Amino acid sequence: MSAIFIRFINRLVPHLPKSFPEGSSSWVLQTFFERLLRENRHIAAIAETGFNTGVSSRAFLSARPDTTVVSFDIGDHPWVRSRKAAIDHSFPRRHELVLGDSRDTLRAYAAKHPGTRFDLVFIDGGHEYDVARADLLNFRAMSHDHTVVVMDDLTPWLEWGRGPSRAWHEALQAGLVVQEGLYQNGQPVKEPTGRRFQRIWALGRYCELQLTSFPDFHSEGVRR
Image 1 (cartoon, one colour):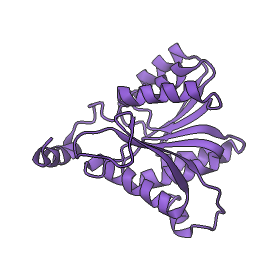
Image 2 (tube, rainbow, N blue to C red):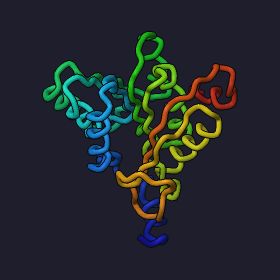
Image 3 (cartoon, rainbow, N blue to C red):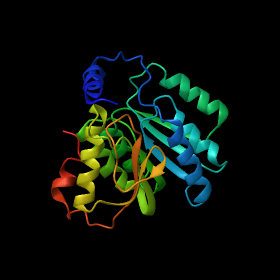
Image 4 (tube, rainbow, N blue to C red):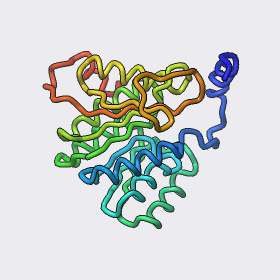
């Protein structure tokens, strides 16, 4: 795909109507999650930022009958509540939706549920740098030593991938997370190739760290 077309799409993104269902998980990512959960039976409690159309939640819940999902979503899209109702119909009492800015709701949820620890966290909510960075940090309080972290949209050449890419690479450099795999369109890669509309995500785990180890990184976990 040409660089001219990529630049055109990047300019178009801010003007897309709010009713356009952007951001839904692709079928390759859904397939990846279903396989990941089938092969890793310890993953049962799952959390995500970015419910949107509920596609990723449905993939998590369809993979096994013992999985549960807590989704954090800003709630701006008009279809969120109807898709939540559809999820509840298909998977009763296995899904929770928390509406609001994840920079606030993740910390509030952790404070309200101090014993909660998720086995997998999927970060695919706000694509602004500060939101993606705060999500990465704030999920740490609700994770354990074996929690799997998946960060989506690691495509810095695209408008919506710049924030998540920067946040993920800074977290790696700071020692907040360690990357265990990088996937391009569902296939493991060492480095992304091309500058087209690829679906690229990373899989990793949180490192053991003290709260004061990385003050610069932690300072932006609190919404200003």
